[in-house]
Image: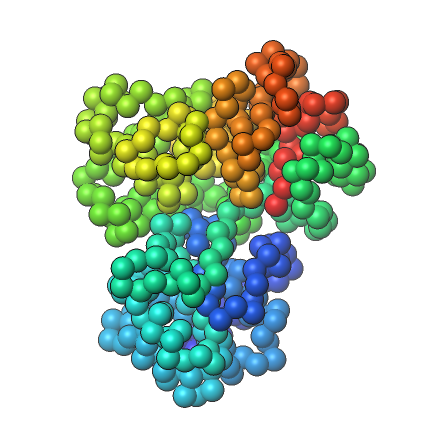
Length: 398
């Protein structure tokens, strides 16, 4: 256990706190059992270590952070760690990447029930399942989902200027005022294109020149390690899934013809639908449906986007579509706090209440004419007019 403590303090020492994501303030850190899930690379580990450094630095003897992919767990159990930690006066246990530990949910349940003085915070893959037959953590854990940087956070990282998140209601009803206040301080288009290309994953700032290579490695690890581990996907199918991702990246956007697609990439129709569902779960794609309820693994999505625009540049660096990038950005920024589905007219239906068409600055309202609560998200505009709202402004929602 001494090696785990030493490793924790080394990590904590090199954790920067000059920029802290707003996700930290959205979490109720007073809960006894907290789960944070999200795709690989979006900053879960940094969030834990920053929270410890900023809030628990005066009681570090009562704090322990461990990653469950540590070799220590080859010969020790999680319950054993918690028991020894509590005996030594431990009160705050932070467990990173729990999905890499077999039987994690049952052991965390036991820890929660047996050590009432211990607070546990754990992180895991987007595929993290809190509810299962053996250990029902859904009644015990408060679970949060993390995304990568919003455009607002990226601008803050680049400039040091902290902008407060905007509500969707404020953008829809006061977009001219909100845009004007931001434009008094920064010019959004100075940062927008770079954000679309390499600003979503927080590790972009570490070595910008190597960002593309690192993101490719991240995608490969998600496909080759997490999908087989958590969804039983055969490794032999991974190249075909990568091919599918490249097709989505190049599309305008991607409207799946499942029969033709299954024939093209050599995957059975039912298997293909399952894989489309898994890729959405794991944070590589975003599936949109006309029906907002009862989505299952055998239901064909109406449209499929990559989860964020950075993935488009990695998977289709020379052959990507501007319209696809715009719609992918819009869907990504809205999905963190709002429900997105496909409308009868337009590109997106938000919270079953607002229809949106996404396009360039000259985009007309032809596709949404006559629809109540309909708006245009327009790229290339600094200021909007009436129901035409600058696309970049939706990047300030979280």
